[in-house]
Image 1 (spheres, rainbow, N blue to C red):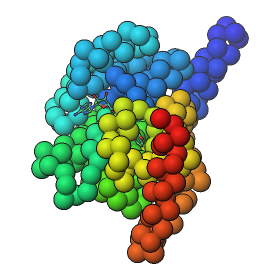
Image 2 (image 1 turned 135 degrees about the horizontal axis):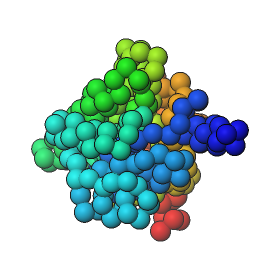
Image 3 (image 1 turned 90 degrees about the vertical axis):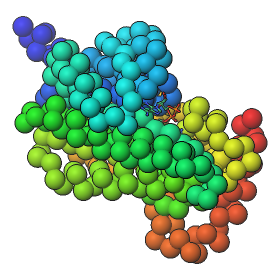
Length: 281
Ligand SMILES: NC(=O)c1ccc[n+]([C@@H]2O[C@H](COP(=O)([O-])OP(=O)(O)OC[C@H]3O[C@@H](n4cnc5c(N)ncnc54)[C@H](O)[C@@H]3O)[C@@H](O)[C@H]2O)c1
């Protein structure tokens, strides 16, 4: 019996939630990249994980590969789809963690993006997060839980060449800050702001574009593992906004205080990013 209690305490610590055993966790956009990394870690810490993605076959494949309980087709632009996912997750037990990770990263200046790209950025990165967060709150009920919003360092300051994406991520950071102050103590909302990460999203960017250079200007791309560890560490914590790495968050916030003078430093960052990107190819 003593050993059983010690085991439960161990699992509670592993879940990241003080005095709470692991529960059910949903990760949107979890078929690949950062979402997959987060889902893998949640499985390892004892959560019963539901991987969802707009690509349902890929979600199911990933779920099987990482030992998640289910992989579901889920387009985060559809508000009802979030409630359907929450209902499926509830069949596995009590929902404790909801990770709004799904996102798109079309790069290019505002004037250069197509209407469809602008719409998709806003609908997936902003509306998708709003619908998911509302569905998670409803599913948590009075028992509470953690919502992790995968935002971006781009949400903390100016990012020319990625302006619409940056605006959507700024909205997500803003949402986390306001909603954290609205929710009862048992409901925690966190915004994770990673620097450039080595995933398909960055690989799809225009190789000669400003965005790709700025994403590399931190010296190296971060790994999925680093970002996923930081995401899971937020579960159960009171931290509202977390940058990865921390120092880049401070730097980008400084540029937001004085975007005019910061724009004059832009060529320096772009030049550095181009050199880093060239080295890593
Ligand atoms: N890669 C980076 O440099 C970086 C940096 C900071 C933040 N982020 C954020 O991390 C998150 C994950 O990005 P990633 O780099 O792993 O990208 P990725 O393109 O590898 O993965 C994104 C996943 O989201 C899914 N998705 C896209 N639209 C969807 C929709 N409508 N409904 C459900 N799923 C959808 C995709 O199918 C894919 O599996 C995104 O929110 C992204 O903005 C990425």
